[in-house]
Image (cartoon, rainbow, N blue to C red; front, side):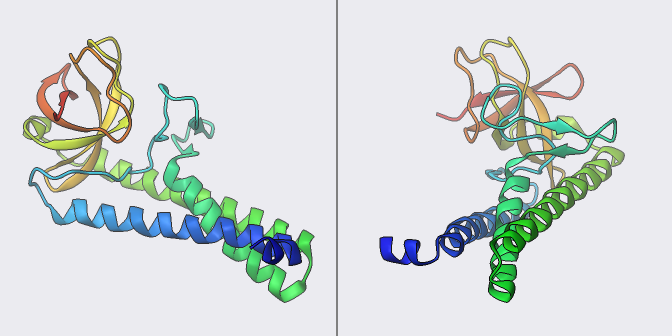
Amino acid sequence: MKEWFMSDPLRAVLLLVAVPSTLIMLIQTILVFIGMAGGDADVDVPADNGIDGVFGDNSPEVSNMDIGDTGLRLFTVRGIVAFFAVGGWAGLSAYSLTSSAIAALVTALIFGTLALLLVAWFFKWAASLNANGVMNVDSAVGKIGEVYITIPANMSGTGKVNVIIQQRLSEMDAVTSCDRPLKYGERVKVTGISMGNTLIVEPIS
C-alpha cells in the first residue's frame, strides 16, 4: 500500500477522494429512491434535499453559504460529496491525459466547483417547486422522518427534518419538547403542528 502510494502520490490521493465520494453519492441516491418508493407511507427518510447544510446552524462542521439573495445554498453534504466525486474523477482523467499535476488539480477544482453549483441550483429549483405546490402540512402528523439539522431541546429552538408529505420528500422546520437535542440522522415521529408549518416531533425510542 505504501509503495503504491509513494509511486504516484497525486493519482493515489485523487483515487482516495473519488472512489469513496462516488460510493457515498450512490448510497445517497439509493436512499432517496427508497424514501420516494415509500410514497405517503410512514417510512424513514434518510436523505437530505440539499436546500440547507446537513450540519446547519446547530453544528460547526459545515456551514451554509448564501450567494447574494438568490437563496442558493452551498456546502450541503450532498454538494460536498458531488464536489469530491466529480472533481476527483475529472482530476484523474486530466492527469492520465497530460501527466501534469497542475492540470489535474485545476481540472479537479473546476469540475468539482461546477458539480457543487449544479447540485445547489438543482435543489433550489426543487425547493421552489415544493414551495409553489399546495401542501397540507397537517398530513405530516404521524409520519416518520429524520433529523436534518439538530433540533434543540425543550422547544428552545428550531431545527429541520426530512419527511415525506403528500408523496414528496420535504424539508420542514421542527421543534421538540424532548429534554435533549435531537441530532442529525435521528429518526423522529411527527406528533403535531406548531405556528402554521413547524412540525412538533419526538424521537422514536
